[in-house]
Length: 306
Length: 306
Image 1 (cartoon, each protein chain N blue to C red):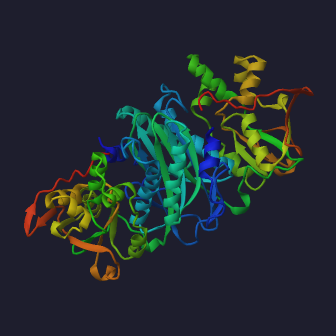
Image 2 (cartoon, each protein chain N blue to C red):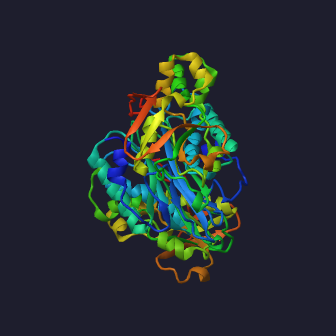
Image 3 (tube, one colour):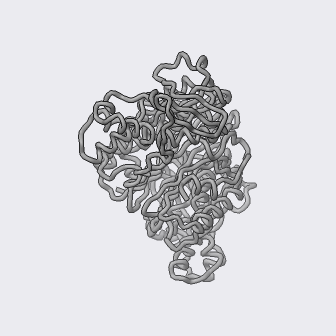
């Protein structure tokens, strides 16, 4: 099967998604942007053995390739619309491609984003680059910059689950909740849309809470005081790991794909599933405290698979 | 240097291109689509050793990664606007990355497309995926489908130069014109914009004239009669190769990135640099003639580097 056959057989499913004038099959796709909205564009690549283990199920690779990009769309406060895929394949194992496509379309369907085009090529390793376009009103877009001293810092969901899940997956230890949090990350599209126009600054947590928070603080020229005792931890994480291990995953574990954002409490009071974890300060310093005492935290992030 | 350093140092150059609200440096880029226009999106990947030889100069790889996508934009009749890059690198040879970036920005500058975002990753081989968004009026977009019996078939420029240039490059034979036609393909953006709303169907020639024409005919449910004696050949091609070799490159050589289109002659009479090479017919057959006699042509296209 050549590249055209692969595209036709596995990746051509959606005859008429919203705003799609011409989909897969021509030299390019044609879409109809919504009048008055700005467009957010993101691109992110998964490389076999770097961003995902070679034994990761193909469906999870496909799901993940979409989810990590959706997470960037969410952190901008945008609504995802259209997706293109550049897929480099090691071999033509059709069952792998089919499972990858199933995972990709699962994520696409869940978040209502349409696959409009792509390119399939041969190479020595699997490389999946997904580009997603989203839409947002000009006044509502969330940037990394914009946090001001006195803002509260929040995160969505719970932290550390994906890093813990990866360590379990690599060790071959089954834990459905934690491993699934690594294999099939949820993109916080819903929360991003609620926060659009309300939060002052936002970033998604891919490299670890401390490492990504540092980027948000740098972009705003501000510092922060974090109460690490307030970091939201899942019951599954706390049941499986010691306090100290759980805290290390929450602070520096990667791949959570939760959102971290700065806001005035009144502006986000109606948003469910968020936790205040600290305060934006004037200085450039990021200070972490536990029970009032300063704790030393590695800002390097979780780089095992980077 | 980590991925953030690479992006900052080599790929952050354009502080304020047209329509770019937020460029490189946030979780996503934000652009302002032109009211009333449709958007064309294309993505194309170059894999080292597959789409370009490992000894190809890095600047030419960078240029090519943009040009092959611009060619798809051109074949849709659109104006290129914004570009994102997903670059997987084998090692961190900074001089290679710098030269690649120079070539990429050369092409971007020539065709007025802005790099708005990207992702840099590590892998075992160089994989460069470029996504470009362009804009076109709804009534003007050029599709592969739409050719009707009685239309004339045209091509831009000259055919076969890039295939010939590749064979010379591989053999280490210098020929500035032909090798440059392979290394630095020109995208027919200008011609595409002139043909938008005038031609009935168009495709760009990446896999070879006969192979790509076949796709245009299939998309329209039509056939064609081609007079291969009319195929435009460059002086350089004819000087270096026999008549028969030149014709083979023109018919099945890849990577020319010229446009092939169907139109009524009156509708394209003012467009310079195009050559009529045949006629669209009713049947599904693609018949090639030379001096009136039918000649047998391989429809496989030029697949050496595919």
